[in-house]
Length: 169
Image 1 (spheres, helix red, strand yellow):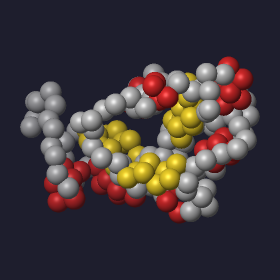
Image 2: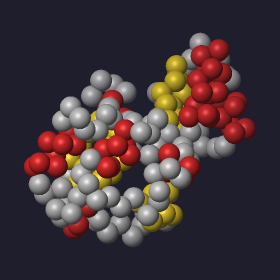
Image 3: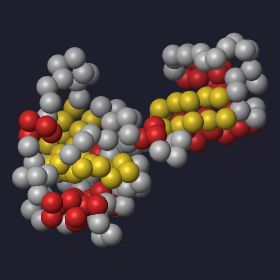
Image 4: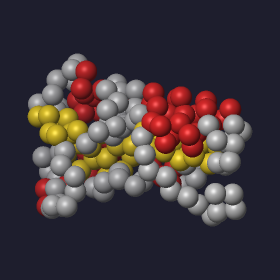
């Protein structure tokens, strides 16, 4: 692949291990769990390569009662199926684990501060979004006592926003 502009290689551990440990690969980009990323980063850097990793998940998405559900829940019939775990307790392991899988954990809250506490208690914190029709909720979520995520978005999905952060965007 020397001289190529880009190459895309799909595969699991055996393929990844070969690519990560190759002196012929200058840059490795991957979306993976934190554990896989940690090992991959060491291997690639050992070959003097560069890594661009998107690690972990669990971006908070809070839907307030004032939100327009037609915007929050667009129909996307071709998307992969996701497991929905409804009314998960914030102390349950599944709430905070890094699964890198299409799992949606749903918590029901009574007070506006509760989802902020839940979100800020996670070790992951790349992005968060709030869905609301009330500006007071925006002020609380995006204000100094609100979400501590790196990217805080209101009434728009965080999907795809993270990649810009790697380039100062």
